[in-house]
Image (cartoon, rainbow, N blue to C red; front, side):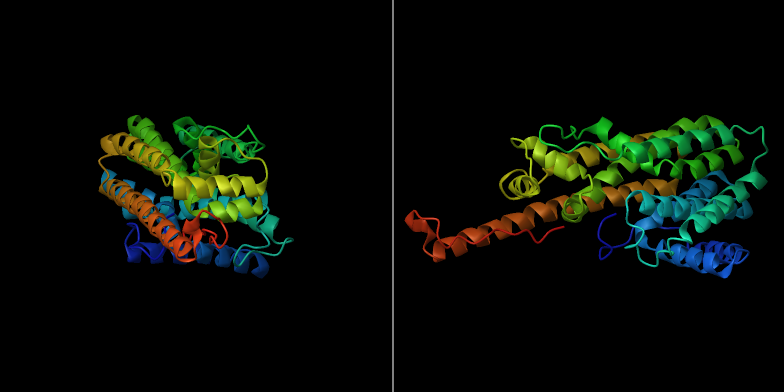
Amino acid sequence: MIDDAWAPLPRLPAGEAEAVRAVCLASLERFPPEVSRAGAALIHRLDSPNWALEWSLPFWLGQAFGLEAKAMRALTQANLFGLAYVRLQDDVIDGELASAEGAPAPAVAPLLATALYHLWLEPYRHLFDAASPFWHYFDTYLAQWLGGSLRDRPATEAGRWPVVDRAHALALAERGAPLKIGATGACLLAGRGGDVPAAEAALDHLLGAAVLVDHAQDWRQDLATGRYNAFVAYAVGRGEGAGSAADVRRAVLTEVYLGDAGRPYFALIESLLAEARDGARPLACPGLDGYLARLGEKVRQYSNRLATETGRRLRAAVVAFLAAGGGGGGSQGAPEVRSGMT
């Protein structure tokens, strides 16, 4: 989510992250070495600024709600194993297991998934008894993830691109639904079950915004690999439609260079983040509030940079075209305009 080269998004304290990391790696050592090593590689892969929210959210909420450190670490540990499980399954679903950095061998992947699912549930079994409403929420969010994973392949034939709006973003966000499990757990442990709807609303809109940001950055790669991309759908939908891959790429470049540089698309992201901030207000969670504020800044910076950079490159292309004699009415010598953005 947003380039790693920029100032990182807020994250839980380094000492807390190290404590959780150590417990997770030790827990994996119960399993055969092939599974343990693959699990450790996956944990290290997810230990990056891109996953700051997944590492930090249970700690931030627990801190805001006054939970004990032991409970916060247990929730963070569970959240991390859940993230690892979902990430592994997503790689399989998307056909990217072989290309993922440090990916397990095909024979090890399903075994690792079993181990990760067990480790995901283990802390929750200690924190919540069988009659707790937590398990209903767990099932609900897991079903949302399963459904979102099945639906995250909208038809992209000519004339069938989906409308990229708030509802579409929230539907795409369902693949991040497991993040709500740890948040709801923190609310229930703190005796704040009434705040669960606020946490759900905040995270649904935050996840919807995050998906759109990721798609804006990854559109070239997604187009090359045949994956659905909301930024591509947005650009095609604003044109006259597109059929072939070349038509689709042309539609995106037309939007970037000759259209609004995606400004309405980024305005939708900012609107979703505003709804996330409104949803999070009852939680009074400084960590989450700070994350949302910083992410909003990054989105505005990215949008402005895209518009500025594409404008600069377009002007340079026009100057080169004119210098090559293109101003004489012919089109010979006109350089191809290529984007240097994501």
